Structure formats: structure tokens, C-alpha cells
View 1 (cartoon, helix red, strand yellow):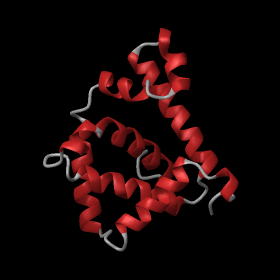
View 2: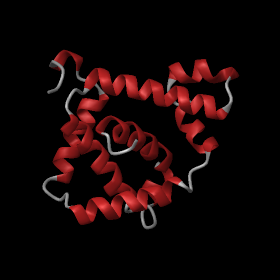
View 3: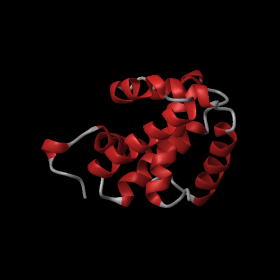
View 4: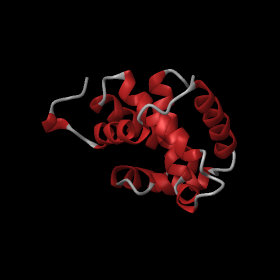
Length: 136
């Protein structure tokens, strides 16, 4: 349930890569551990860290010049969600991205790259968790 190839964007590519990396590894035990860990890691992330992730996007950068940090993050989440909805129409594809984000966050304590990009991973996880109904 993907859009035609001419409309393929980052979300579609991310879901395909997530499926390839994940394979058949998802189990209830992994999902539960990963979700609990994601909550713990998300508590470490500051609003300013999330804002810094948001300002990489040119649209958000120009819109956020006069915004507070919280407003910038909310605007960016709306922007990400809109793009995700435009590109992916399959709950399975969104779930694949969320599961990969959760698996990556399991490595937070041991992987410097995950620590460096935790704000991005958290934002992507929020969008995909919301879209899949796993975050309400």
C-alpha cells in the first residue's frame, strides 16, 4: 500500500529499509522491552535537543525563527506526520519504522550513534507510534 514510484519519499524508503533490517525478529518480548526502553530514553531528551533536530528542516527553520522551542517541536511533528500520511498508507509500513526505531533505541546505552541521534529517533517514533495507534 505504497504510493506510486514517482511519489516515493523518505518515509517509504525508511519503511522498506526497516523491513529488510528487522526481518522476522519482532516478538512480544522484544516489543515490550523496546517500548519500555524508549520511554526511559525519551525522558533523557530535552526540548532544546528536539528543537535542534527540527531546525534541520528548511521549512521548519524559516517558520521557527520567532517560535518558542515547544512550538517549533509541535510544528515539526505536524510537518512530519503530514509527510508520513502523504507517503505511507499502510499501517504495516508505519509499524516497521516504529519497530526499527525501538530496536535502535535498545542500543542507546552502548552505541554512540544512537545517543547522537536519539532526538531524531524519538520524533520519528512519536509520528509512527501515533499513526500506528501504539501511542495515544
